[in-house]
Length: 355
Image 1 (cartoon, one colour):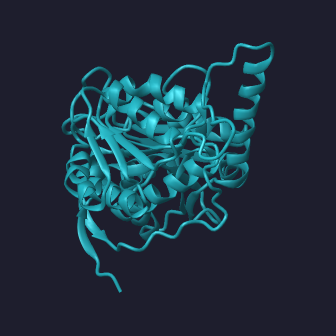
Image 2: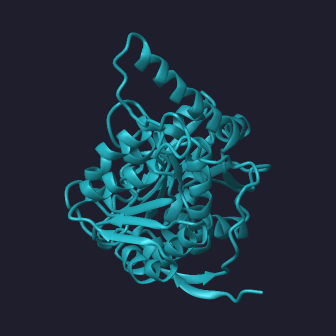
């Protein structure tokens, strides 16, 4: 039986990736995610893996594209401005159906912003960071254990659907330490072999081709409908969400990632005071758990969305909720001193509960 470890969130991501069979990492330093490449640089050579600190984020994501196209389990990580630089490569990967895992430990923005806690990259993550109307699989952990577990899941989902998967963390989760129970990776029994990968002929008369350029009549339209069908399949099969107290709730709070930790404590405080408050925490931000919101707000039409930004996920909450629902927002945009405490959120619960 493995012992619990006291682990930093960024290191938990790296540990989960190596356990899941990641043997290629390409990245470039940026705070607050630097523990990930530091860990990979130290540990990958020990297991025969490949670590390269690229000359830029642009170079790194194209190395990821190459290793993923060859069938390797590959990961990169960065933060806000670095993810922006990777956007073109991410779009190429989505268009070429190349699986990989991308980690964004968010920092405040826009521009260089700062190195504190923020959730300002929600739009960037769930709407597609680059051009062409594509989607990534987006997972939003809220604990060190989930950073470990969901990184493993991200590799499986990426391979299963041939779509890049993104772990959307934040500086609080990446830099905090808490207990982690490591466990062995279990490869899904139905995960198909990568017979599409570019590995040379190997006895075949013709090698595989991976591309995102379609110039023939109707080819690109057909390809985009093919990608769209996979996104619909994800919505049908892969939604993950945590809920609590919805049965008797008079007010629903919703939050993702690091903000959800604060909200959970505030909801517990409210319940102790006799306030019937429920919780919805999306774990998959794409596919978004729209049906959960629609059903819950059909019974409880008042929702308070809490985010560490100026209001981003709240738009998807409004689109997903019952048309009669009253969806409200409370947020702090990130930066030094802008992280709310549970007491602050409890005050907002009291305010909106009575109103």
